[in-house]
Length: 312
Length: 295
Image 1 (cartoon, each protein chain N blue to C red):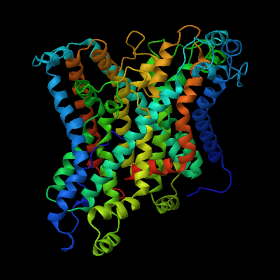
Image 2 (tube, rainbow over the protein chains, first blue to last red):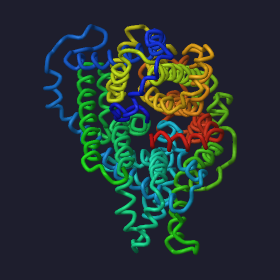
Image 3 (spheres, rainbow over the protein chains, first blue to last red):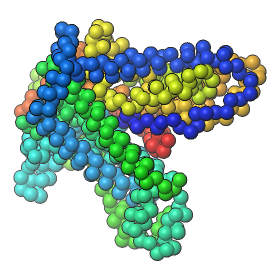
Image 4 (cartoon, chains in turn purple, green):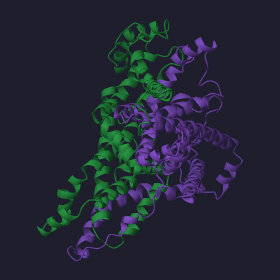
């Protein structure tokens, strides 16, 4: 979750007024470089170099065993005419849409209700539990509960609607089922983040609202949501970025099936690279995903900055 | 901020909602336990029983490889097992070494950025922060190629190195904290003749214990649960972590007449370390997630 938080550029605190004299500038520089050298090494070798190499590989035909061959824009042309790519982009967008809409809605409602009722750390801890387990564990558990023959969810459905549902076997249900697992897993984490945001809103604002005769719903709409905007945008960005890269729960449950119905982008990239060994094309698709994520992040950040006012 | 002390309809509805959320959150965990204590053959006769069906520890014995093939098959197992001790060891090495290294390297870097004065400090900090913009997926494939070129696939070094030296988020987070530490104690120590390195070890590091613990916990959880990177760089049981081994175990189980109790026993074993961590550090985890969000 920590991987891609949008970089807050240049916090205001960087320029500390230099303390007169006592420590000499020359004396500290070698130590400083020594202390940051592991970070610089890690950044250069495992972030900067792979980023540049990824860019380069997306212009090549590369099958790992032989060196990459420059092919110019061939991969990009292939991408534009690759129906499977566009299909998987659509599938991913569908998954992201469901995860964001339902995930944020449920987390927001849960956080607001918790905030009104109780500050119990135990309850917050309990709803956070699914965040701590791996996607593999979550997917295993839900694929058992959604099992068409013996799964408890289908036992329940059979009693309610008379027949079980093939959650992972039905192409129209595969993505909603995966999104449900994803929402279950991340809801508590998002709710705890939003809850922390709610705690920063001063209670006096609500008292003032109440004095003006505002109802709970009115106060939620015109006080809570606007004041929470920054944290909501952060939660939305984290959810979008996270669900765009969904892989483990898909790999454990449907593997992209049935008939590519849940072939999310990351799954398709993985298949291209590790079953067809087409690394050049896989790199091109990763680049496309990278560009889309950057675009979405900037668009969302702009949305917050555009009308920044409220509490600050 | 409580609306009213009398129980209104709204408050009751709200409590019912919270109760429902808790049930939906916890039920799958209960279901893991309930299923793992069931007999696979008996399970089919009463799939909606809330209690274990044909109570037995057989599933755990099967998953751990403690049952003979005949015993396993008599209870509906496939005979496949999970070498839990080995995978647990691998996970512990992977997550512990990576966490210790990256948190230490981030702390030293954060100190250099927050407390030392040197030419190029702000520029270098901005450069390192650009890493936050690159999604992991984009660096995964080239990193795999790099690890392969270095001949480090199927080694702990190959699994750990890419994450062990640098984390932009950790550096940013710790630097923010260190900037807000009072400088008085450091200045006193400096007057007493302590060098900057000594100040770091004796003063700044101990004072930053809380945020360092927070980052260590979050890094450990993420690494323990990581699936994609180990999947790329390992193909050998000798280094595979538990999370990955569990997914492989699932794939090796038969599609028809699946041994769900065995799978759930393995799932519980894989989730157990995180559940223990949660019981011990639950409070800190809840606080730290709220904290990282506000920052």
